[in-house]
Image (cartoon, rainbow, N blue to C red):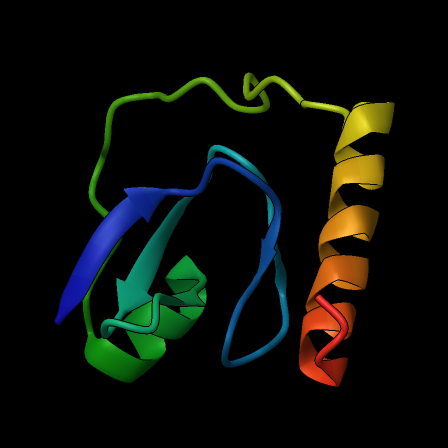
Length: 88
């Protein structure tokens, strides 16, 4: 299965390792989402890149972990280890 899409972040072509910039049309191949640049898609599959609507790139908000997330994760590991040892 192949589908043309605009990439929302910078990717590498799975064939030639060309850098595909964000917002450029690329071909996704298969369920594993292997990406091909337009030049490789024409060379391999004979398909020219269609005109797709523009998408906004880089608008995903970043979430920084809070201090309590680290403390909670550390306590879960300690409880898991104690449970394995039969102490809990």
